[in-house]
Structure formats: C-alpha cells, structure tokens
Image (cartoon, rainbow, N blue to C red):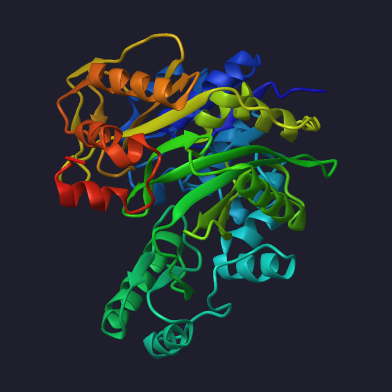
Length: 450
C-alpha cells in the first residue's frame, strides 16, 4: 500500500490536533489552515506547515473551499482530511477535491449527497428494508401541510430541517398550537445553518435512547461495523456524554442495530469511516435517524474498546487498503465527556481567554484538546474545548476514573460545563444505566439530587 506523504487538515481545534497526531504516527506531514482568530492555536503550532485562509467567520475561512483547496495545492498535499463539522459532509467540496487531483479522506460525493438530505435518506433506506421512524417522505411546503401531516401521524411529532444534522434545526411539537412557531424556527435554522429551509416531520419517539453504530467500508465493496455507542446524554439535541458499549443494548438489539447499519452502508456503497444513528424506543425497536458520513466527535470510545485507531483506518482506506473482515471484539468499557466553554447553568456559550490550564495524565485516560494558556476561545466557533475519554475493565471502573479525571481538570479564565458533567455522572439514573435523552431535564427538575 502506498501511503500519503502530506495531508492538509481542513479543520481546527481538537480534531485538527487529533488528525495531526495520527499523521505523525503514520509518518505523514500535516498541513494546518487557520483564521485570524486561530493564529496562536495549538493546531497551528503543531503543524509542519500552515496557511492563512481568512477572517474568523467560517464563511470567510474554514468554509472557503477555494482558499482551502489552493492551500492544499500550494503545499503539495496529496489529500485533505476534513475532520468533522465544517466541510466534512459537503458533497460539493469532496467533488472539488477530486477535480483538483486531491484525495478527499471520506466517502464519495454521491454517498455524502444521498445521506446529506434526511428526506432522501429516509426514502432510500426504507426501500432497502432499513426501519425508519413513521413520518412524511415529502417536504412540507408550509405550516398548514405540517398541521395536516401531524394530525395524520398523531402528536407528539418532531419537525426537522431536511439538510440538518448535529441536532440543529429540530423542534418537538406536542400540539397544533405549537406548530406555527416551530415550523418557522426549523425553516430559519435550516436556511441559516445548511442553506436549505426544507422541513419534514416524523413521529416523536418518546423516552428514546440515541444509539449509533460505527461502520467502515473500503474501495473493494467490503463493509463492516465496530459495535455501538450510547449517545443519549444531550443538551439541545447535542451530545455531551457518550459510552461504548451501551448499557441498554443486549445481544438481540445489537444484532438488529448492526444489521440495519450494514444495510445502510451497502445501500450507498459506503467507503471510509461513518456512523449510522438510531433512535430506540421503550419497545426496544431501532429506527434509522441519520447517517453521519464522517468521523464522529465520539469516535474515541470505540477506539478504546476495540484497540483500533479510526483516523489511521480513514487514511489507510483512502489509500486503497481493505478493511479487516474479522468480527469485532470489544474489551472493557469507555466513557467520553465533552468539556465545553459554556455556562453550566444556562448551557449558553461562554467564550473568553484561558488564563490557566492543568490537565491530568494517567493510564487509560485520554484528553483530546487544542488548548493553550493564553488562548482566546472565540465566539465564532463551536464551544467544544476538549474530550475526556477513559477506559475501564467495567462500566463502574470507567465511571470512577471519569469522575476523578474531571475533578482534576483546571481551566482558568472561562466558564465550562464541568460542574454539569459531574452532576450527570453522579445521578442515580446514569450510574445505573437507566436513562434516555430526557436525562438532563430529569436532573434539572430534581436539582441534581437523584
């Protein structure tokens, strides 16, 4: 297998640092791009080469395809790794990389396009036998159509931006009176975040678990999976704590989840690393939610229990290597907590300058971050600061390690969600593995005492 000599990383923060580490381990030079706000960022300091791409707003820098591709060509990079977010699920960017003789480290533009629109994905996968949440398969033109569809399906329902992802552009609707405002908000968020105001509707699965399956595919048409992850601890439909395996999943449910995930990957001839997300109701039946055609933020918990490096796998697959065809074997338990620059009470972003930084180091503890003392956390970007990942022989052992690690983290000068994370880990529902996506509401309503 011929390996790349140089890769440009079209991202920033902790994921850019994470991909650089994988490049170094494989003997590949790493090229960074940066905006004015990131001139002193860790990913820039660690890079072998760096290229300025514009002003802080992402539309003028990290989403500027021309500048990123020009930087890759000027640097002599053979490939671009998009990380997650930003351009990672943009089929036009993947196509333009190919047009310019650059390898996009991810799936084909067609796979990204098919899964990028949730309505298209619903229709395609339903035809292939993948279970989908009951809902409408056509876009809703206005709130009147939404009201008619909701009446047919039955309340409560969930409105979703068709081009959305990462929990953005979603609204639960419990009654007809809530529909007009929810429809306007979903349309607006879809347009603002993804360039499309198309909205559709699904039945709201109450008290659900959010469980996903890690999949891999290669250029030879082989597909495989690396078991499941539990991602039900969320705020504003966005994950903050993940674990692998799931405490909710037994052998029967695992077989259903992985079989459906592989059907999805085969249906779009998927290449590289991706994730198929499911919602699982109290009846333990999984329904397809969406497919993320990229590396996930929470990929590290899968790495911890399988011993595989998923960024290594991404790069190898992009170079033409076939995936391992042996059945996955998991060992122990892994937990991940997302440390964010947020007010722990309001959960609103809290940017500022980091004055002090102290991160613990020990065996079976991994902290992926892009932090430095003196670095200014910008309001222009996502609030994620670091991912704290631990491994233990059991879930109880991993939980104890995580609590200890979070208690020892010191990030001065800004507010973080560390107190919230510790409240969740100390909650009886979480400790017993008996929780769903409503856990934060339960904790907030009880004052964190349960």
